[in-house]
Image (cartoon, rainbow, N blue to C red; front, top):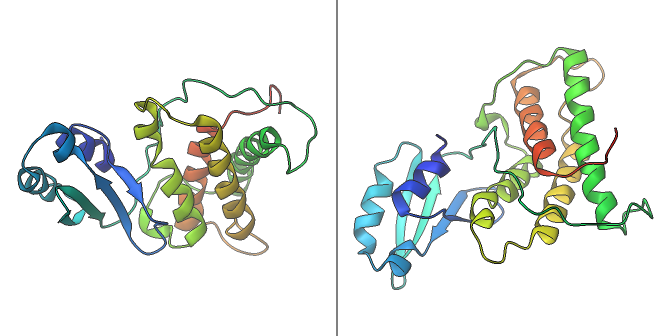
Length: 205
């Protein structure tokens, strides 16, 4: 069970990621208000979890939760409703192309990683670049959207794809040139694998 799963269990609902996560990994929760529970009781429960750096009660009972590092669910929840986008034009103006190309790029990363000997494993501390942190930030919305009445899947998948394209281009997941494979590459490849599972792809690659 990942730390966000434990947070959802403690709060009774998934918390909502906040901010860019460039510097801090922050979630917020209105569970105390919705469930009519004392905010301090929920805050105390959350503070007991390993990996929680701080919990602050704001306003009438909102919780602001800071984690020590981001988390990644290797088996993300499936998007229950896939938007229908046209296949053409295959340009950046077509959201369907952007999303499917993101899936294809993630698949390519996995193939290259195998060919270049990138190891397995995920160490969140290796993902210090803001591009992969932003991908993790968007992925963190998935549990809450799955249970939401208005998940907004089209906009979500497009945002995830755009964030992943930035990470793919600016912080490569596989070694470049004479660079040796290392833990940072393994962590980035794991992110690519999760993105691949979430983004819908073309029928054939």
